[in-house]
Image (cartoon, rainbow, N blue to C red):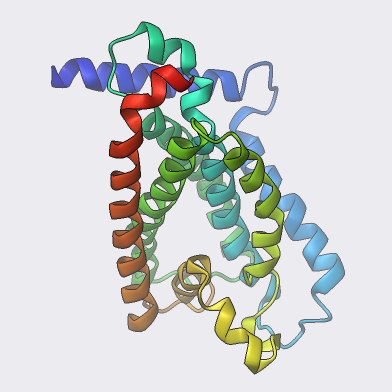
Length: 251
């Protein structure tokens, strides 16, 4: 039974990758080009405005690649059950495998691009030392958080199609409310407090500890990320279990 689930998961990931890069000449290279395009824009527009940020290119890049991963995964996961309607109705496969395969597909694309970006980061004076290994558990934790957010969206979107539309609408706003191209220090103190309710702020903080500053993740932000991920996982499990039996009749 376990082998059957493993094969099914492999098949779904393979199918997703084929569809994602079908008729694409560059394939996985797009995982590199997308953030690079934004990096060039931010460097051109904001590098002088935020000259106080040391190594601005590396600062932006370390946030951009994880944002693109989060945005792409959450968007795909919000549609995963709807996109696989015919498979859900025709195959006796556990429904949870569809969002898992979607997340794994995005993770493969992210890692392919991330490997290329490590080379660029070294060129941008990335401090390569033993602390860079902290990025491995951070990627795992961030992936779990992203998957949980996506599972909530995907489960609710089956019943309320406005969820997917709303999330696509909110995504650009969330991008600018997350300190990717700027440091939170520029936000007036009376407003910066509210920015810290954004979980992505804390994830970017520990990511930049490792990739931008070359040090271990700060304890407070690491604990916050662990706690918010744990809470998000519990919420996603609760919503999925409450909604999964109604998927077929609502798809």
